[in-house]
Image 1 (tube, rainbow, N blue to C red):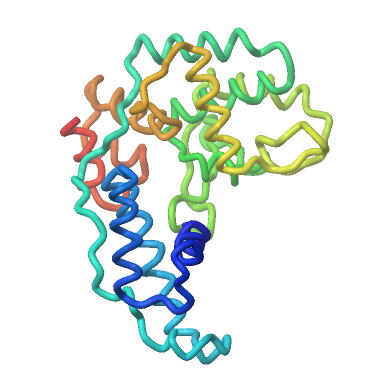
Image 2: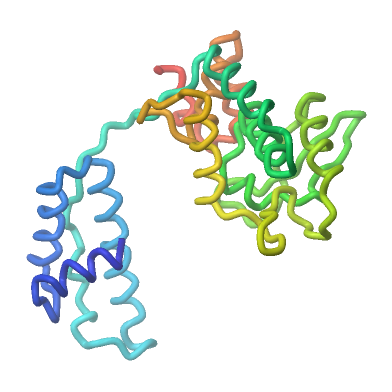
Length: 259
């Protein structure tokens, strides 16, 4: 986002941006047909940058103009507080799992299937999938669990229970692993390394397309929505669904209930 903002300033011959330039960039986003959510995201990043620059101007010997936060108070876009991403239907879940299962012919397919099943059943975010390590899998009272680092956490003190189907999918994948990488899901091209969030997102989106699910409202994060939606649909309480998704505030869970 900052690179795009920089490109805009260069194209418009702005050497030292003023408050009006930030507002003009926001208006240019509107002119490009960007959604309110996108405009708001861009403005949040730019406003945080100028806030940071003002705070650290002396420390990093930045241009004196950064002593003033030119973006302070500039409004972005009003975004309705509801999820614009749809959960998958029961039929779509079955189709996605069947497609992923049919592609379990090599190490890549086994990895993708295991990660898809894990995300659908537990509601894990892509960042939580990315940071999961093999050593995070443990046993408590004869139940298999996975310790995770939740949103905004530094330590892995949260955990999710892994049903037998998920354990079997992960075990099948790990059985064919010959590397010594500690991460649960890794790349198998040009050596092994942990997967990035973008890679996981593209992998999920690719499987969705192969399963014939082409809706723009269904994204990789829809798998987490699906976990909440199905839990509530089949009698789960708000409190139980909140615990499942590890929401800090129940208002976040209520959005799924409204859906």
